[in-house]
Image (tube, rainbow, N blue to C red; front, side, top):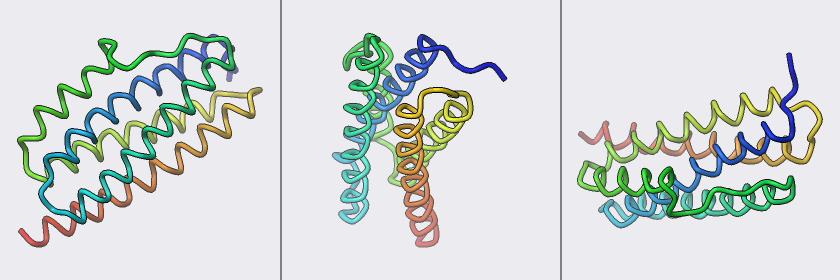
Length: 151
């Protein structure tokens, strides 16, 4: 297996940053649209963690000498569009959309952790983010199951 170069690591981190910026937009829209108070609290808690991820990824990209993606660029606006469109959906549908984003983040972070050989600082950061995304996915699955049981 070939280790990722510094440039490839920066590129991967920018991919992650764009995904996190998009998630922030989507979670923000859903937090305003979801009627169930307990679920809104959980979505806001996840939103806060995703905002932390944005800051941490931005800082790491800069430390590596890269240029971080910025909020409002084309790729991040996609999250705003998805969030706005899906805010008309049911709570279960919104949570399933969020779960899909978390599952993709789990796959992305896991793959990057496996491929980064000689950058322990970045690997540690991605491991922390991976743990958060797994916890988010676990919580979202539990909420979806509970809502579907209620019918």
